[in-house]
Image 1 (cartoon, rainbow, N blue to C red):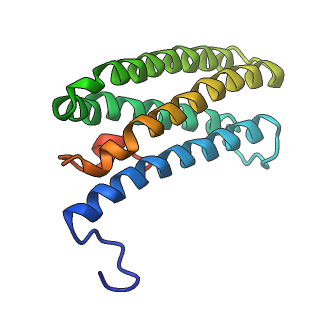
Image 2 (cartoon, rainbow, N blue to C red):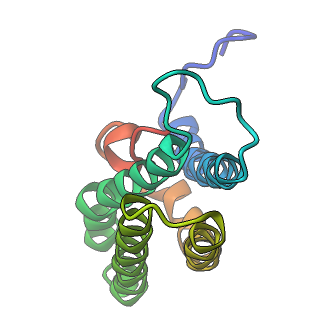
Amino acid sequence: MIEGDTSISSDTDRLVAFSTQLRNVHQRLRKALDLARRSIDGEFEETDGQDLLLFCRGFCSALSGHHRSEDGGLFPQVIAEHPGLKPVIANLMTDHNMLEHLIGQLTAAMDSGAGPDELHRHLDGISAVMETHFRYEESQLLVILDALAIEGEPAQLLGDLV
């Protein structure tokens, strides 16, 4: 690989890059959650027509998109190659469903004009499940992803934050 070139030079580099991309997506989602919290606290200057809760909606959309991509693209490939991981994938998908429920509650709270304290409570719940989920997913799948011949583009398998 040429210095400064970020392209993937081999299948091995692609696989290692894929596990790194998963970690990077998780980091971006953590940062998006932080921006959502900060927007609730009024840390950003509101401009005409800009909804400060846009950060919350953007975070929710990114998290949901990441999980839909995993459920529909990544996880079926993991199970096909490693059927013994079916219980792990089932646990991860249960987390995804729980997070969708929590996101729905946050969205309803935003739509009803809930105050900062209530919105923070919703984000706290999402954060707790999200962190536990990310740690479990990384502990169970990163080594597998480094050895799995994954088909598809990272954005299709991990969401648009890749």
